Length: 214
Ligand SMILES: Cc1cc2nc3c(=O)[nH]c(=O)nc-3n(C[C@H](O)[C@H](O)[C@H](O)COP(=O)(O)OP(=O)(O)OC[C@H]3O[C@@H](n4cnc5c(N)ncnc54)[C@H](O)[C@@H]3O)c2cc1C
Image: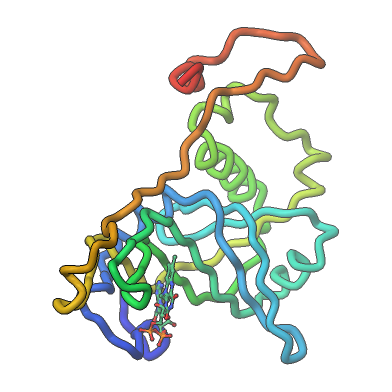
C-alpha cells in the first residue's frame, strides 16, 4: 500500500499507522458498514452504506434511482472509511480517555461496473460478505432485480490504516487517584435469530445455528 501526502497523518504517530495490506484487508473484511464521502458543488456529503472487498477493490451497490449512486456512476473522487470500535479506554483523567479502534480510509475514483459477469460476481461477494452461506441459500437476483441495482467499484490502492490497541495512558501524577481505570472491550456480534412468522417456517440453516439462544 503506497503512502501519499493524503494518507500520511499530520499528528504522525508511526505506531498508530499500519500500511500492511493484509492488516487493511482484515479490517475491511470484518466491517459491514462504510461511509462514503464526496463533494457536489462544494458541498461535502457523507453516506453510510454496505460494501464488500474483492482483492484490491471495494464494491458498493444501490438502487439505480439513488442520487448518490447516480453521482458515483459518473466516476467521481470519493473518500471511504471503515471503522471497527474495539473498546472504550477509561483513564483516571478525563483528558486521557480514548477509544481502541481499527480504521481504514480509502481515496479512489468510482467506476460503474458494467459487464454482467462482474455485476453478478459483485452481487455474490456482497451477499457472502454480509453473511457467509447466504448466497446459495436465499433466492438469487432475477434479471429485473439486477437491472434495478447499480454496482460501483473503487480501487483501494491509496489507503491508510490507523489503530489503537492498548490500555490506559495516564499521566504519572494521576496514578494515585482513586478512580477506576481500564478498558471496556466492545464487539459487534450477532444475537439470537428472530424467525419471520409470515411465510413458511423452517429450521435455522446451519450457518445460523451457532447464533441460536446464545
Ligand atoms: C472511534 C474513533 C474515535 C476517535 N476519536 C478521536 C477524537 O476524539 N479526537 C481526535 O483528534 N481523533 C480521534 N480519532 C482519530 C482520528 O480518526 C484522526 O486519526 C485524528 O483526529 C487525526 O490524526 P492525524 O492528525 O494524524 O491525521 P490527519 O492529518 O487529520 O489525516 C491525514 C491522513 O491520515 C490518515 N488518517 C487519519 N486518521 C485516520 C484514521 N482514523 N484511520 C485511517 N487513516 C487515518 C488519512 O489518510 C488522512 O487523510 C478517533 C478515531 C476513531 C476511529
